[in-house]
Image 1 (cartoon, rainbow, N blue to C red):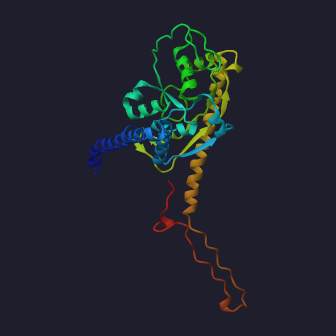
Image 2: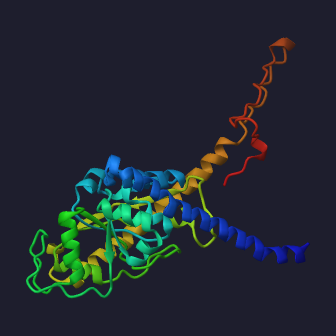
Image 3: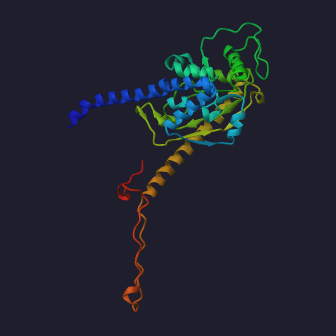
Length: 322
């Protein structure tokens, strides 16, 4: 049996990867076509909002928000939103952050053309190129404070986009996906740009997306996994003398807020498991109350029948917590 199991293991893994890939293709390449066709009738902005809502509903994600910044402040925020990048589910979360545009690379547009077209029409996609040409001399920036001539080309484009297309931009400051728990070092480039062009920053690290679409195990977990976002702080570059001080303050706050999100995630998971175990545990039956020696036999107290909170066909004795 062991030899047969070892021989089938590569085949089973290949099948698992195949079905996982099919699901990813459906959700991120086929589904956006439907909402793209709806865009002329309901506006592209509404269509992409529905697209994100549909994806999060399909994944059965349960968002949990924490931190001093409430949803009204998130909707009114104007600037760059920093959050973590853990996996494919991070391409479904824009509704949680006030529907910002995503700063992404051209490869995403090539791999997901329908989603890219829908996001471009709705003002939700800004292509990031590492080798952007230097802007022409005298190019103006419509940011809150005028951009200096010869500023970073990506900074000029971000300011243009924030002013003309979308007031919020979602950025992953780590620069790469990180499937593991923890943070990668935050890149300095985007902080330099935000400081140079005086763009406010909303620090909102999150935890849980890597478990919803688990790329390491080729698994889409639809068991209702939590997704915790910590809206920690809005930082204004004007409050700092140098970009290094701005970067250091944001890094410390972002790291501490991420740790808080991790602790909240673990607490939610632990309470969920305890709740499942408690809901499927048998109701304790009180011990019979002994009657007095001189009482008649009919007066002996009869204990109530044991009841089970578990619906049929499940039984408490066979229930397990996930």
